[in-house]
Length: 279
Ligand SMILES: NC(=O)c1ccc[n+]([C@@H]2O[C@H](COP(=O)([O-])OP(=O)(O)OC[C@H]3O[C@@H](n4cnc5c(N)ncnc54)[C@H](O)[C@@H]3O)[C@@H](O)[C@H]2O)c1
Image (tube, rainbow, N blue to C red; front, top):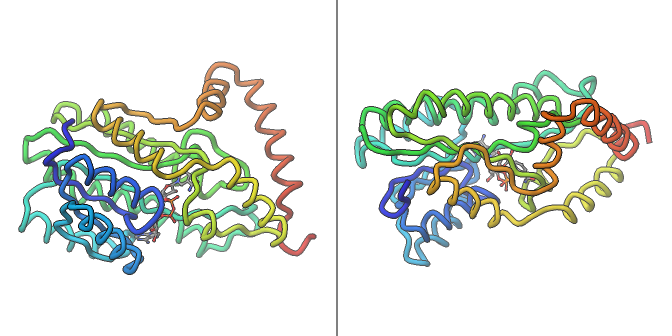
C-alpha cells in the first residue's frame, strides 16, 4: 500500500528496529504515532523525525503489556485523528535460558510484552481500521525464533511462533477488508536488545556469545528497509538473510537434515552458554 500520507503507529519506537522503521516511514511520507516504555528514547526518536521535517502526531510512553494504557492511546488517536492506516508492532524483549532456570515471573514477563503487546495493538486498532473501509496494513516484528524454535529460547520462540500464527490467520481474515499483513522474522540485529536480553548463563560465556552475535548482526536500518518494502508490495513473510532462508527451507523440505543441524546447534549453545553457577 501507499505509505506517503498514511497514519501509522509504531510500538517499540524508542530504539533499534522500531526507531529505524519510524524514521524510514517518516521519510516515506507517513504521519506517525509513536509509543515505547522508554520515555527518553521515545523523545529522541520524536526529535530525530521532526528535525528532519517529519510529522509526529502523537508520541506517548506506555507499557505495551498494559491493556488499559494501549486502549487509552487508541481512544486518543481515534477521537483526534480517526483510524490508523498502518499498525507496526515492534516492542519486544528477549530471555535466553534453560527451562529449569526460568522463574514463573520470567514466563509472565515475556508473554506479557511479546505476545499480549501485539495482541493489544491488534485488538485496539484493527477493528477501527476495518470499519474505515480503507486500505491498510498490519506489520508485526517476530523473529527467526518465530519460524525456527531455537535452543535456549523456549519462551522467546513460543511468543514469536504465536505472533507468526496470529499474523497468518489475519493475513487471510483481513484480505476481504483490503488490509494486508506482514510478519518480519529477522536474524541477528545490532540493537539495544543485544545488551538488554536476559541471558541466564555463565557471565563470561554470555559476553563471548554477545560478541559472536554482534559479528553476525545486521543493522536495524536493513530490517526497516525490508519492512517498508513489504508494506508497499504487500508481502507476507519477510526473512532478512540467506542463512535463515536456507534453514527454513531445510525445516520444510528436509526434516532429517534440519533435525541434525538443530541437534548440533543445541550442543554448540550448551557448550558455549553454560547455565549460571556451573562454570
Ligand atoms: N535484535 C535482534 O537481534 C532481533 C532479532 C529478531 C527479532 N527482534 C525483535 O525486534 C523487535 C525490536 O527489538 P530490537 O532488536 O529493536 O530491540 P530494542 O531493545 O532496541 O527495541 C525494543 C524496544 O521495545 C521497547 N519495549 C520493551 N518492553 C516494552 C514494553 N513493556 N512496552 C513498550 N515498549 C517496550 C524497548 O524500550 C525498546 O525501545 C523485538 O520484538 C525483538 O524481539 C530482534
